Length: 122
Image (cartoon, rainbow, N blue to C red; front, side, top):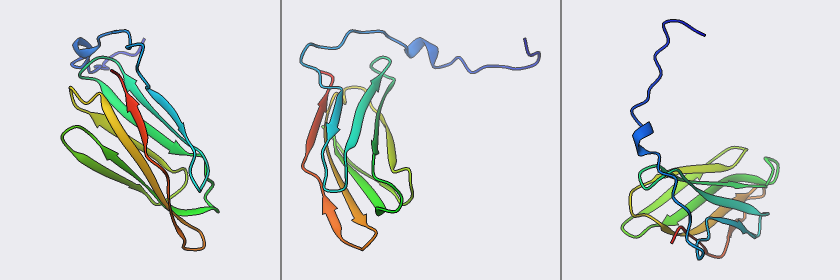
């Protein structure tokens, strides 16, 4: 036990264990010209969801990577300029379907792009 430590519990009421739909695609392995990417939606209830994605490419292979995310009412672009190339985005209530694409610049300066991939909790 550690005395004098106060833990934040203001988010705990948002936890809601709900089973996923049988049609849900909450995880994808995405083939890209610069190696495989992995993307998943972490869901702990309608108000506690995140998209987490990362590339398997090594630092010597890429200079930078970008994840483009199309959501129902917004578009987000996340950039990572160093290894490990990973991305995290909090999702808003109702954002249950995403379209992802990845872009990268190789160590030699070549621009590359993946095909689109879909994730969904519905």
